[in-house]
Length: 370
Image (cartoon, rainbow, N blue to C red; front, top):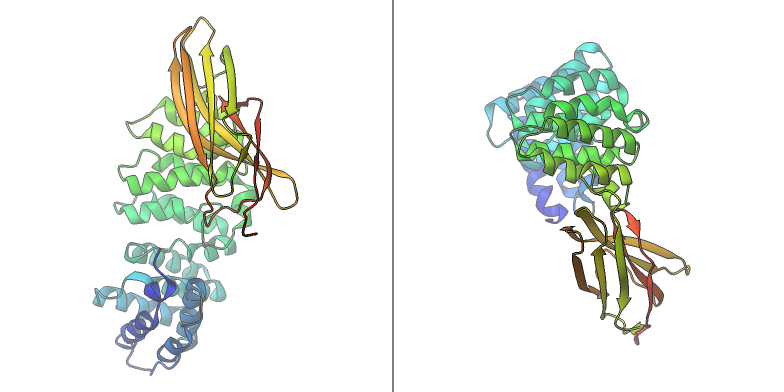
């Protein structure tokens, strides 16, 4: 991802100030032009907030004046777009919440939908969801019928329980079923952009109610399109990694009669920053074909001596009666930015249709430079 200064830098702040000044003749904006000099040490979110605050300071009067200026800028300039829209939508939502009238809240929600194709209003709508959940959700329901894919996506993405970078909306987590009607309206959407948001939203909901997510996925598969299976798989991905039996059953992975040999590791000790090889054999000893979702779990030792499991996808296979699958895999312990390793006892197990096997233990030796 680009650095913050490439997304919201002094040049973006300058352009926003010019865009807004061009549509207001009754005032000289002071705070927006000045804030550009303060952005350099700030994070991306802090830069957006600084521009939002400057915009609010330059429009200290009622909501209508700020909204009118934003509308004019949006209608009269093709350059009023991109990352400057984040602080604009945030200012708009903040002002509407502050004024707290039905007219300002409804207008803000309408304007967010108009602005979202220029970047996204998914962060700004969180303020309105927190302020008046039912009002904001009623607009989101209407957006599912919009001809614009960006607006339809806003309905799903903006109401996700755990939207990255966004403020938390506790009511969405406490009542996960509230957004299911939005997902029901969009899971078959013609736009992959929208469908991906639906799948991510469904996956978010699995943190609150696995049963709700499984029931929703089952219902979608009863009336699918060519894209529905992908949406369901992506939406169930966290439950599948956890070995949730109901989620696995939705995709046809049910308990099977198997003879499992392994996994076994080729080395009981491995050097720091190297790899571990493991092998296993899986045989279908039943009388029916066995559809298998096969993952493997690495139990990493942490600094406190406890083990933390991490699930990795391995393969999906259907084994005929008597058929055997031979598995050979290498797992790397080379340091990466998203995972820190500690020397000591580790282990690897298979997870087949959600059921873990016995684990094979090995030792990760200390780094000679530690």
